[in-house]
Length: 267
Length: 253
Image 1 (cartoon, each protein chain N blue to C red):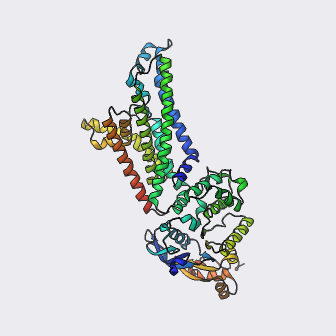
Image 2: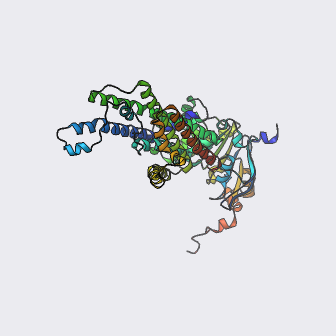
Image 3: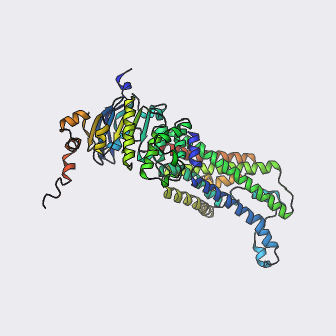
């Protein structure tokens, strides 16, 4: 069943397009901040006042080099990568409903919770593979920036591998959260719109809560985007483990809901 | 072994309502080994709901449907027991027929080589690498049939399988189903095309308003209607169904 679900994902254009958009989004984000911005700042033709306003990364700092390796593009914002990866999962979830393939799947595997399990495995595989592609691209972007800047790598190898590993894990979790959204909502337009609304509203909601209360309650820190960024930028193993546990719990909760819904649904 | 376990398909007292509206009411029939059973009835009669309950896709409110004595969901290797054609096979338009069948083969844990065999059986080998969006309705139906027979099942359940098939395709399907049944297989066939059913069915189950109006052999049905299955069918479905059509629309001329 896992093989069939993986084949489903690899034989439709939507998966390839989502991965391509994520890759192009990451490359564009990283190259703008590490190559284009420094070039504009140092260019003779740039107005000094404008150049002073442009954000420039100090590539000699290990923390800035690690920020380039953040697969979600850093700063906790809603980036192209985040949207593309979640939509990858959403499309994995709704594809079978949209074209009637769920009937054939349920005929081959009448125990529907196993269908969700197989879809989870396949989406995790594709999500992790996407994460690895993005990791390779971000390393390439970092090396290019270091060469152009004439700077040596300041971050240690464990730091680099840790940031990349947590990034791949975050991408995998996000694709699974998207899968749960897709399975729960079924309709393509509804699923995409609800997912985008959740992603866009999350930082706005967090901002409002913080402004109103001066602090962020625990539940507000358990949103997908916040957790994914917390996982990637975790300053120590304990924080990383806590973020991983919270993401695992959130993903498991959503997928369990999707499995229970699918089990009761008429096909 | 009990009788239930010997019976390929056994439907007993199935009932189902959707949002308070009764769609299927106390339906019972069986499909024996080596038999083709035609499930007949007007649109909305409950044929598709019955088939979906039989295949575990819809949970019945009452009654049960058994496949060799077991509910479909309890079959350990369902695609080797039952092959089904519903909804033109749930085909993704962006995939090729070969990709679709490889996925179906992986779902049922069948050898990849079987994909090429069924493509040959349904006559789609030459077009197997074309996108399904470029297929005619008849070609899509052939892909759906190919997926249904991938596991070399003992039972075929087909909901309007002749939809979109050209005359040659219908001819092929009828002969395939007859041969399948003659080799011991069981077929439950829902169709509106009475002439085709008459040519291949052994038994008839007529459904109207969610209820079985008649479950008999084709021979008995024909004997009861002077050899005219259409007359038998119309006499079995509800009078309201018939009166909604004007039997002699040009009589006033």
